[in-house]
Image (cartoon, rainbow, N blue to C red; front, side):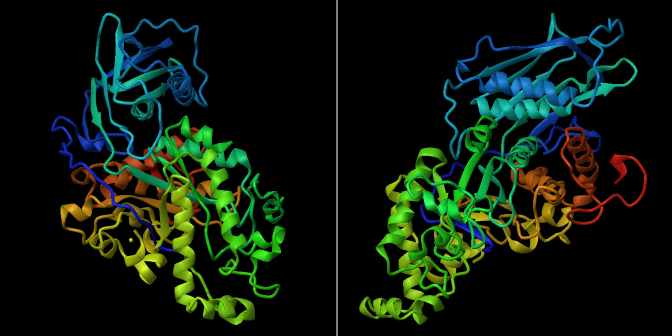
Length: 510
C-alpha cells in the first residue's frame, strides 16, 4: 500500500502557542499517556466516593444525545474494571473523599468533524466543600479526552477495596498537536467480527486516536452491503459509525479504485476488463463510474466525516492496454495506460466532490500526476502546497511486526519540513493495520502497544516528546498494563508486534 495519504484541497491552519510541562511536574513519576500539553501534580491521595457523580451546572452543552452521560458511565466502568469495589466499606482514613466531577462544556454542539476542538482543562484539588474534580472543554469531545486522562489517575487499593486518585492536586491543560490521528483497519483480507472492531474503537479512545480509517474492500472481498448495488455484497466472505462517533472518533471510509477491486466483479462481471484480466476496474465503461457514484452516494448517508479515501495505489494498467476493446477506447481518446490511470483517479475524485467529500489518495497518485491533484514523501507533498497525512511504511505499518515501539515513537511527521507554512499542511498521521496476516485472533497484540507510541507522537506537543524513546518506556509500560486491565490484549514492550513476555514477572517490567 502507499506510504502517505495525500490531500487534494488546501487547508487553513492556525499556529498555536505551545506550552511546556510545568516545572513542578517530575516527568519520571507521571503515569499519563499520551503526555499532556501542561501538567502539574502533587503527592496526596483522594478516596473516590462510592457514589461518584457527574455534575454539569454551568455547561452550555445540553447532552440531548447522551454522549457526555455515556462517556461518564464508561469512565466509571474502566476505573472499576476487574476490581470488586466494596460499596459497604465505610472510609474513615486520612484521605479526603472525591465526591464527583464537575464538567463544563462551552459549545452546545456535538457535531463531530475534522478540526473539532479537542482541548480540555482538568483540575483535581486536594480538598473542597465538598471535593469535586473540575473539567472544562470547548466541546463534548474534549471532555471525553478529559475523562480518559482522569481515569489514568485512578487506582485500586487492594487493602480498602476502593478506588483512589493518586498524586493530587492535578492541574492539566491539554490539546492535540495534530487534528488527524488515525488507525487503519483492513476488513477485506480477513473477516473481523463486529465485536472485535468495536473493541478496537474503544482502545483507540484510550490512546486519544480520533480517526478509524476503514479499508473496507479490496481484491479479496467486498464485505459491505451497498443498497444502490446489492450484488457487490456477493464479493463478501460471508453500525460501527455511530459507535465510533459517540467516542469522538471519526470513520474515514476507503473505496480503493481503480486497483484492488477484483472482488467487485463477482457481483458485476462487466466491471472487469475481461474474464481473465480482472483488475483494475474497466476505465472505458460508464457503468464503472455510475457504480462508484452509487457507492459514494450511499457512503454520504452513513459516513459523515468530511473526507473519503479513494485509494489509487498499485495500479497495473496492463489489463487495459491488453484487452482489445479497452485498448481501442484508449486510442480513440488518445490515452496510454498512465494517462488512463490519471483520467480514472480524477474522474472518481470529481464524483466524490459532487457528494460533498474532500478526497484523500495514496502516495502513488502524487508520484504519477501530483500537479493535477487539486499532493512521495511529505516534504515533496507540502512543497507542492498539498495537505498530507503521514504513514510511512517502514515506521508506522503495524503489519511489519519487526518494527519496534521505539521506531513508532521516533517517527516525526515533520522530518525535513522546516517552513511553517508547509508544516501546517501536515494535518496528522496514521498507523496502518493491513490485514493479510491479521484476523480477530491477533489484531490487538499487533496494534498495541506500538500504536500508542505513535499516538503520543501525534497528540503531544513536540517539545514534550521524549527525545530518547527509553525516557517514555516506563509510562508506556504502565499504559500497556492499563490496556490489559481493560481487556485489551496488548503485547509487552519487548520485541516488535505480537511479542510475548520473555519470562514470568510483573506486567510493568515486560
